[in-house]
Each structure stands twice: as structure tokens, then as C-alpha cells.
Image (cartoon, rainbow, N blue to C red; front, side, top):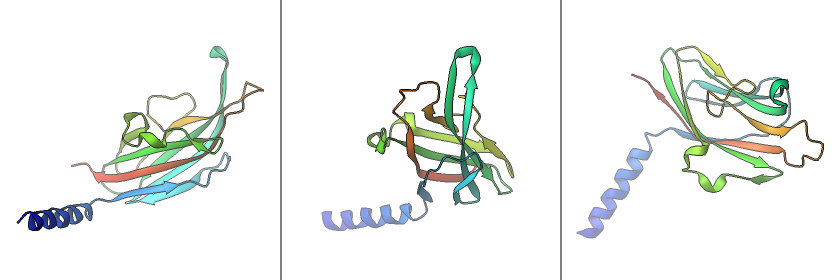
Length: 156
């Protein structure tokens, strides 16, 4: 009887997972100031670009990666993802997949877009550090990033 129960649970899990649209996208990162397509998932397009960001008042000069998400659907959606960052070829947060630090979500209205901006930390993970530009001895720089567990769901 236990084996039948285990088999039933296995099939139930497989059935439920088949309705979940979760995607991952490793990026072939290149430094460019033009929007580059990362992926398209369930009517939402993902883009990135790099920008030189300077805040003279606070003495900051950084190269930032800006993300843009565009909802091409006629309904509002919630978009969720995990961001993994590679500096000097090594992932600095890949062992924290379920950690809230690399988890992000935003809501997008129908046929709208949101994009990151320099030093705009209000929309979590639509902008993140690539490298510091005002340190000549700076040896740490972003070499790649990955969006994992991408999920798009309708807001009712």
C-alpha cells in the first residue's frame, strides 16, 4: 500500500509541475550601451544594457547593468526571477538560490515596460553593479549573469 501511495505522489508532483512555467536564461554578457535581448517568456521580453553611472555628489562612478522588462500582453502580470552574478568568472551567489537577496519580482501593467536606472535602488534588481569606474586598482568586475526560475503569472 505504501508503494502505491508513493507512486501516486510522484505522478501528482509531475502533473503539478507540468503547469508551472519556470525558465532560466544564461546571458552571453557583453558590455554594450544598446539594449540586448535576454529572453522572451510568456509575453514578457527581458533586455539588458550597461551604463556608466556617475554620482558626483557622493563620489560614485560605476558601470551598472540595467534590466528592462516589457509586458506585451493585454493583461497585468507578475514577473519573478532569481539573479545570479558572476564576477571574474566565479558566481558569487549561486549557492543561495532560495535566498531572498537574489529573488526579485515586479508587476507590469498591460503593454508596459519597466527599466532600471543609474543608482535607482527602488526597483530591486533592475540595476546592479558591473564594476567600479573610479578605482584604478579595481580587479573585480562582472563577467556574466544569469536569470533563473523566471515565472510570469497573470494578476487577477
